[in-house]
Image 1 (cartoon, one colour):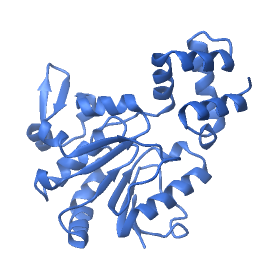
Image 2 (tube, rainbow, N blue to C red):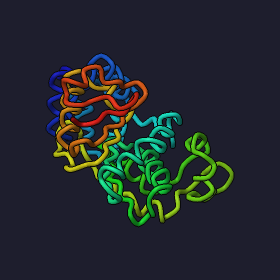
Image 3 (cartoon, rainbow, N blue to C red):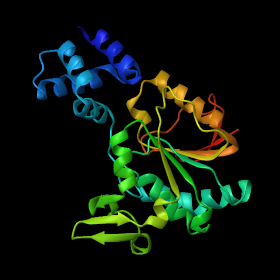
Image 4 (cartoon, rainbow, N blue to C red):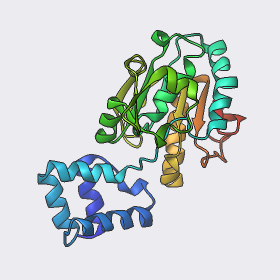
Length: 257
């Protein structure tokens, strides 16, 4: 079996389309995973992940890029607090629909809850948080994080919404957890939530081809209400935003026209 055959088998098995990833980078990662598990090629590896649930979960987990931390790129979060949240509340009211797409281990949706709590009571906050990877969603629901994960988070939020566990870990309090609904979702295949006031998708789309990126940004646009906001990562300025029906509000923040 060659890599083309492998991609077809994986799509049948997982509905993950490896054609949407940058080929050289993804093939290299998969080849090293197969070698690590001491399989002699794609065919034997596919047979193994079909019959071994743990190996299958390990493979899906390996495909996803989970580099996550609370309040990543603090200046952007300050812009969110100082300008974007007041704009959203002023435009859409106090029951906001916010989607954290490709949320990884949950650091981002929990950061959204904590920062939004300056403007709204917790029982008014509901974040939809999605990721393709079941394992990271389980970690997200558990809400236990290392000291390093929370080092950028302002102390006021740590003191108010987290509990220290031992010397090196912090747990998100249940009142914050209740504000987030975690769901499994594939950005390249599944239906998107509708009527969102804001979508946050950061440091994920860089791993996709230009064609897949444009498709995702168009789908986000369809998911947003008119004048809704898309918040992207610090390496993901959308050069052709006008073609995709956005205007630029501020660096990394785009408004649906």
